[in-house]
Length: 88
Image (cartoon, rainbow, N blue to C red):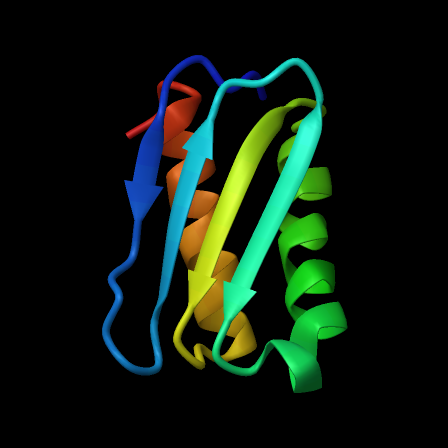
């Protein structure tokens, strides 16, 4: 899937994650999290699973995590990517 526009998903509420996806020449992932020191690798793994599943090879994905669980992270990333790729 090609990222053609900017899109967001999620909120900045506790136990949620705010995801912003933008067009970019390469794949960039930025993670900001209240639990970064403990779960950075798990968060990145969840993001990459969705990215690979959707066939995304370029775009900037910015994550602002407020302690979301794995399935919430995946759902928010998928929603933002599909919105940015023109799917509703």
